[in-house]
Image (tube, rainbow, N blue to C red; front, side, top):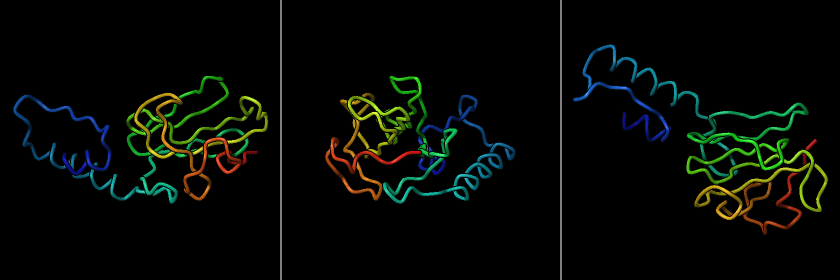
Length: 142
């Protein structure tokens, strides 16, 4: 279970009080561990394993990191993927936002929690830290 939790911090286990040592339970845990080890695709920008690819109708892709989640943004057409702690990982803004009405996306390093205030530093498409308001922090989208 420890190795599984290392690969996916949000993995949940149902086990009876005192634990289980049944052969079936051990086999199931071993299969899940092998599944997680085999399916690892790593985001080259952050070095983190990806658990899902989130695609929009135009073919734009955001990564959902292992243990993370996907939620709508403040504007219902926006899509945000999050780190396990809830901070933004990728943001897709198909209608832009603020004064930038051109469709674009964003990437972030790990922050301290949910919301814009707690998201991590902005990164460019290569994974370099950039100012949040720079053109490089706004990734092109279709």
